[in-house]
Structures are given as structure tokens and as C-alpha cells.
Amino acid sequence: MQLGRVVGRIWSSVKNPGLEAQRLLLVQPVKPDLSASGKIVICTDCTGAGTDEVVYWVRGREASVPFQPGEVPTDATIVGIVDELHVDANAVGKAERGRTSVS
Amino acid sequence: MQIGLVIGDLSATQKHVSHEGKTMLLVQPLGLDGSALGNPVVAVDGVKAGVGDRVLLVYDGFAAFTAAGLKQAPLDTAVIGVIDRVELFSAAPAGVSEALAPAGGVTAPKQQHKQKTP
Picture 1 (cartoon, each protein chain N blue to C red):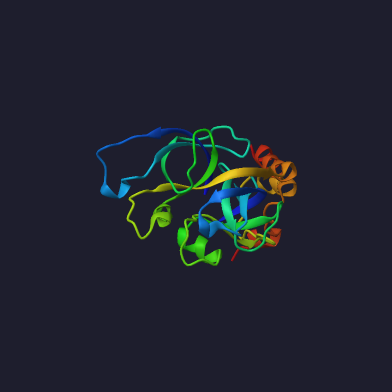
Picture 2 (cartoon, one colour):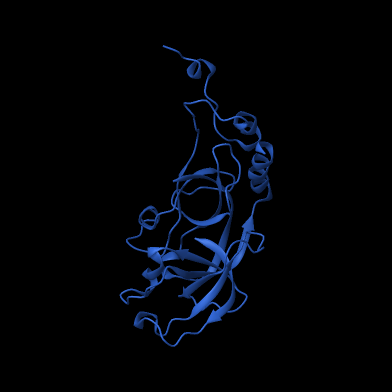
């Protein structure tokens, strides 16, 4: 799963019947410090996430699992709204140090 | 599978029901030299790993929800082991051994192993 922030929404009237009643949200992947990183993805949602919320999303085949037994053709789904993030500064530093010493 | 470093965790109230009672860890994927590889990911904890642990990460859905003890769930990443030691059999690329100490990376191969000639 990855962290992301909901930055928008997509409306579509002509679509696969499986996508009827599905909200399509634009999600910007973010790092643990909530800075943007990577391309925006379009996600279906099973949590009721709204604009600007920090979420975690799943990609691949498992993205359609929350909608079973329905058949929703999706490859990315928001599966949780993040309340709190705990990041250990020492542990991050450990990985960062590794990076700097190699270059 | 990949090596990762647990750097934190997250809590969520609104989430898929299958995630209830599961610990979600923030894991920084690492290279063999202990350097960070890409962005940290959210992984379900299958082994009770803690912050600061070097762990084994899987990126497959089936592996992830099986490790979490579920039949099927919207999970694509899981921590399935805590790494005690990594040993490279061939000569480490330049720079790797220097990076080992601070990052707690891989054990460098012993001198006599890589110098062996027939």
C-alpha cells in the first residue's frame, strides 16, 4: 500500500457498468512527511474519503476485493483514511545515512 | 521480496473491515548497501516487527493477505519476516562495504571466499 492525498475527483457518464456508483478520486502519492512524490493516480474508494484527506491505497488485483461479489474493474482503491502517522526519526536517519555514504 | 527498514506506523479509523486489528507499518525499502530505495510503503505486519527492524517485504497480494492470516483482503504489501543477517557470496560492489557500518546493511563476504582460485 502507499500513502496519498485526495486532490480531486473525476466524473464519467459513459463507463463500464461495474464502475456505476463508484466515486473516482484523484490521489497524489505522498511521502511520510506528506510531500508529494510521483504521478497522480485515479482510485476507486471504499472508505468515503474526501478532498485533502490523507489515505492509504492498494494497487493491483486486490483493489477490486472490497467490492466483491461485485465486479469492479479497478487497479487502485483507497482502503483507509489515515488518522495518525508515527515516523521514527532515528530509523529514517539510518536509511538516509546509508544513501549518502554510497553516492 | 525486498529488504526494508520499519520507520514508523499509522493508525486509521475509517478503513476496510479486513484491516481491523492489523498493524500497518511504514517501511522504507532498502538496497543491499542499506540505502533507501524509493518511497516508504505502507505494509501490513505479519510478524510483529517493530520500528528500527530490518524486515522482509512482499509486494504480492496473495502473499500479503496470507501473511496477515486472511483468506482475501485488499492488501498488496506485507512484512513477512525480521532479518537477522544478510551475507553476500560474491564480491560486494565498490562502496558497499563502506556503507555497511552506518546503515546496518549486509555482512561483507570474507576475504578468502572471493579470492578462491582453482
